[in-house]
Length: 153
Image (cartoon, rainbow, N blue to C red; front, side, top):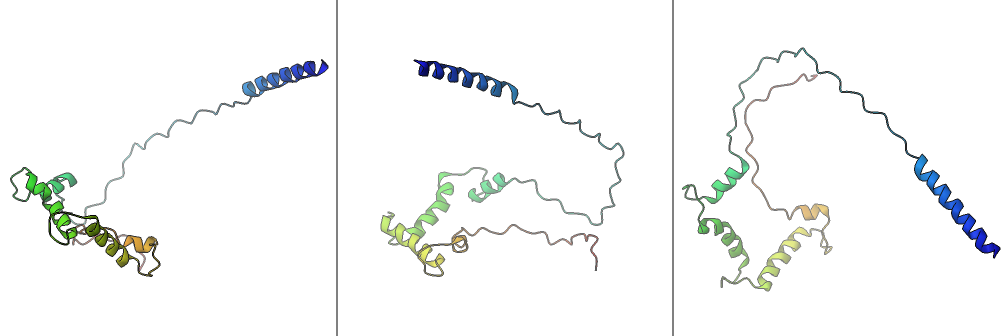
């Protein structure tokens, strides 16, 4: 019988200890200091050494639209939209029957893998995998002379 009493007493002690632990451990951090005031005096800008050509205001989406709109009439027809996909499909359709079989797709895919696997290990490391990326056209660079900074010669 005394075992039941000892169990009840130990349970009460654990509950009491839990209440103290949950109530007393939190600390409040002090608030952050206010931001420093902005300077009231603005330094003058240096004179412009060269006139920088302005870029066109065309967005990326407008450029993408123009790539699809082949006849430049301001709308994309179904044929214009599917033209790039037809070219990609035709590259995979080896026998030209208008149907892409799994074998035709597999040949193209395994050929691409074999070209990338330079060390013939049957697996691609990060350097080999990077060669499988789709080649994108490089962005046009400005051939304007760039202003020189304060470099020590």
